[in-house]
Image (cartoon, rainbow, N blue to C red):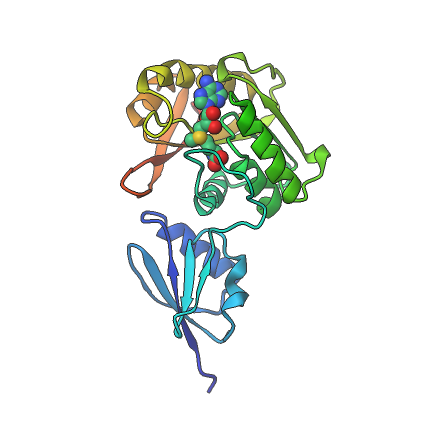
Length: 256
Ligand SMILES: C[S@@+](CC[C@H](N)C(=O)[O-])C[C@H]1O[C@@H](n2cnc3c(N)ncnc32)[C@H](O)[C@@H]1O
């Protein structure tokens, strides 16, 4: 009988179902022993912890000798913005979005580009668009696109306030974004205008069956802005992110 090695996978509280899904899709032969609030224990024939480097949704893996691999680290993430998203969570947002290779993905609050790069590199989407009000953020995303080795034809990035976004083609399949929360960055009063402008842009740019996947702490505001008459708003996940409890919302047009 082959001896099995035991591993512990650590993840952001609230995201366990996604971690299990990625683990079992990529390693269908592992035996899951237990699933807790922050970790999953599993056993595998593989003795080398590096085998599990291609898991992107958990934050860490540990073997029985106490060797730890950081699974949130991305070799291409050289530039950071304040309140940048954890890359493991960016990967989970892309899982929630159910991306396909035909999709054009837009992140209008792209920061250093972590979500669009994740969508291109690991989900092989057709193209991404990213914009941000901050010129520094766009410079940083450019650095990360370069180190990620992404071809210029696969992305477009530009500086813009969400209220002035000069895109008009209704060809975006998914808007995936980590919105300003108004806590670590920005203010609640500014968010009202920002979230209203996001709704206007989404209405203009999203294809009929497109959807938004949004991470935010401004839950009430989001529900007010994406009104029930026009949009179907569902919270699918609540994440424990260092004391904050932002939620991931999936928003579709009503009756789609
Ligand atoms: C929470 S951060 C997103 C971080 C990004 N996901 C990352 O990991 O690098 C929110 C971003 O929204 C941008 N932002 C704030 N107000 C904006 C506005 N009115 N229009 C467009 N972008 C805005 C900020 O510059 C910031 O980069």
